[in-house]
Length: 187
Ligand code: HEM
Image (cartoon, rainbow, N blue to C red):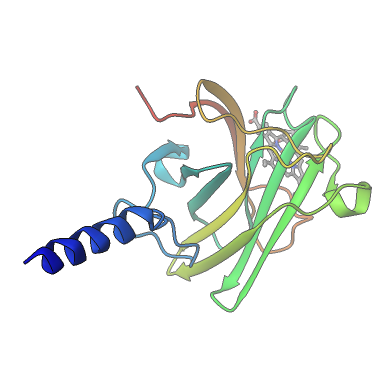
C-alpha cells in the first residue's frame, strides 16, 4: 500500500515538472482555440491572430487574396519605420517569410538582411484553400535587431496590414490599412 502511494506521488511529481504543452502549432492551419487574441480588418478579409509564449509571439494572418500578406509593427507615419513580416504562400510546400523594414513613408522596404540586420523569424508555415491564405510565424518579442520593433504583450499597439494582388513582393498592395490593437486581447 505504501509502495502504491509512493508510486502515485512519483507520477504526480514527474507530471508537474513537465512543461506545459505549447498551444500554437506553426503548421499553416489554425485549430479552434489555438490563438486567444485576434483583430479583424477589411470587413473580415484580413484577420490577425496572436499568442504569447514566454519571450515569443506567434502570429497568424488569414486573408482573402491570391497574393502576399504582410503585417507591420509600430510605424511612425504610414509605412515609415515599420518592422514588417511578409508571407508568400504559393502552397503548403512553397512558403517564404521575409523580415523587412520600411525606411520611408511609402517604402522602400527591404529585407533586414540586406540592410545590416538579421532575419528574426523563428518558424513559419502556410496553406491556401480556395481564395483564402493562412500564414503563421513566430519571433522573439524583442529580437535585439535594430531593424525590428519590440512587440509588447499588453497595452495599445499600432500595426499596419496589407495584402498584394500576386506573389510578386514588389507589387503594391491591393488593400492596406492601419489599426491600434489591444495586445492582451480586446477588452
Ligand atoms: C509591396 C510593396 C509596397 C509598395 C510599392 C507600397 C506603396 C504604397 C504607397 C504608394 C502608398 C500610398 C497610398 C496609396 O497609393 O495607396 C502606400 C500606403 C500604405 N501602405 Fe504600402 N506599399 C507596399 C507594401 C506595404 C506593406 C508590406 C504594408 C504593411 C505591412 C504596407 C502598408 C501600407 C499602409 C498601411 C498604407 C496606408 C494606406 C491608407 O492609409 O489607405 N505597404 N503604400
